[in-house]
Length: 515
Length: 120
Image (cartoon, rainbow over all chains, first blue to last red; front, side, top):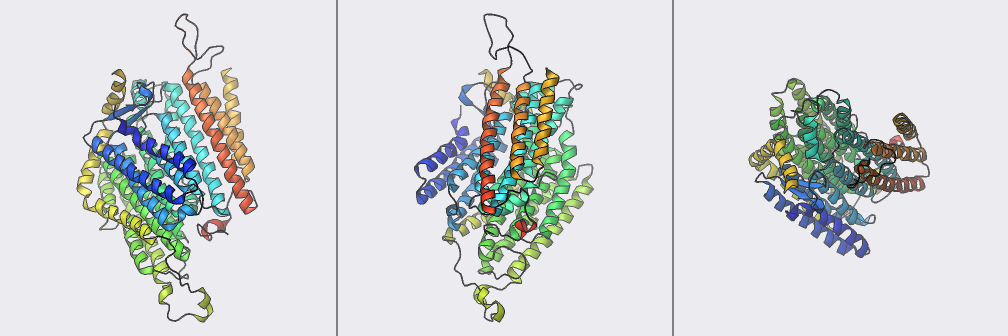
C-alpha cells in the first residue's frame, strides 16, 4: 500500500497536539512548526498529485481491513487536486496570519489551523460516507475555534449562530446516512454505488429521501440558497485570514456533491435520475443572483467579500448541476480559481480593515492606498470574472459547457447579468474606499473639523513583508492559473472523465479488498 | 415496537426543532441536545430493531444476532455530539458574558456597523 495517501491527514493530526502540548507558550516555535508543517503538506500534496496524474486510482485501507468492511482512503485525480489546493491556500493564510499578527490576538491559532487542515484533507480523501461525516466534524470543530479567534461580543454571537447552524447540518447528515444505511446496508461509497445500482426501481422511496437529505447537507456546506444564511455573518465577522481559509470549506460541500452524485447516485442510475441536477440548478442560479445583489448592497468590505464567495459558489454549482463531463471539467477549473480569488479578496479585505475599518462609506481616510488599491483592483477583476484573469476563463468555460443544456438561455442570462452587477458592486466599493477618501499621509489640507481624525500610522502589520508575500503569492497563483489554463483544463477534463466512469473507482476500491 | 420507537424519534425531533426556533441560547442548546438524542435513536434503529439479540455472530449455534455496525456508528455520533454540545455551551457562555444578554439573534447594527475585529 502507498502510505503517502494518509500523510496529509497524519501530519497535521500529529503536529496540532504537539504544538498545543509542547509549544503552547512559545509563539515563535509554534509559527516555525506550523509553517514547516504547511510546507510539508504542500510537498505531500505535490507528490500525491504526481502519483494520481497517471489516472490510476489508489486505495489505502485503514488498519488493512478490506473494503467494504474497513474504512478506505481513495486517491484519484480530483482528491489529489483538492488536497493540493487546500495546502497552497493554507500556506498563504498561515504566512498572512503570522505577518498580520492575527495569530497573537487569541490563543491556539496554529493548532486549530492544523486540525482544520486535517479535517479538510480527510474529507477530500475518504472513500466512506460515515468517515466523511467524521472529517466534516473535525473540520467544523476546528473552524468553530478559528471563527471566534480573537474574541469580542459580536464575533461570539456570530459564532453561536454558526455553530448552531452547523450542528443542525450535522444532525441532518446523520439522518441521511442512517436512511441510506437502512436501505443499502453499507456506507462505503463504492459499495453504495454497487448496491444502489442493483436495487429495483420500485419501492425505493426511502433511498431517494436519503439521497435528497444528503444533498441538503452538502448544500448547507456549499452555502446554496436558501441554506446560505450562516455564511455572510460568520465569514464577515470571523478573522479575515480565517475567512480566507474558509474559502476551501464551501468547496468541500461542492466536492461532496460531485463525488456522491457521480459515484453512488450518478446520472446513469435510474432510481435517482435527475434528482440532484433538477433541484440544484435553480438553487444555484438564485444563489448567484443573490450573491451579486449582496455585493452591491453591503456597507462593509468583509460582508461584500462574503457575498462574493456566495456568488462564486453559485457559478460553481451551476456547472456542477449540469452533471456532464464538460461542465464538470469547467466546474473544477472554476473551483480552483474561485478558492484562490476568494482567499485573496479576504486577505485584501483584512489589509483594508486594519487601515480604515472596512466601511464602504467614502468618509474614512485610507493610508497606503496606492498598493492596496492595486491589489484590490486585481482581486476584483479575478472575482468578477473580467479578462484577463482566470475568472474570465472560468466563466467562459462554464457558459460554454451550459450551451448544450436545455435551459441555457436562463443560465447565460443569470451569469452575465450577475457578473455585471458584481462588477458594479466591486467598483462602487473600490471607488468609495480608495478614491473618494483621501490618503492620510498626503493630506496637505486638513479639514479643521476633522483634523484630529487624520491618521499618521505606519503599516499596522508587524511583519508587512510576510503579509504582502502571502497576498502576492495568491495573485501569482491566479496569474499562473490564467497562463496555464490550457494544460489545467486538459487535466480537469481527465478528472471529469475519471468521475464519470465510476466503474474504475468501484473496481479499485472493492478489488483492493480481494487481494 | 416499531411504531413506539418511530413516534419517540418523531416527538424528540419535533420538540428539538421547536426549541431551536426559540430566541435565547439556552433553549436552543436544549433543542440541539434533543435532536441529537433523536438522531442517535434513529441511527440505532437503522440496523432493524431486535430483542435479546447480541451484536456478535455465533459460529457454534444458529442464534439470532443484530447488526453491530449501527451500534458503532451511534457510539461515534454520541461522542461527537457530546463534544459539540460542550463547545457550543462554552461559546454561548462566552457570548453571554461578553455581551450581557443571551439572545441568539443579532441586532441590525451588529453585522453592518461593527467592523470585524472591533470590540463594541
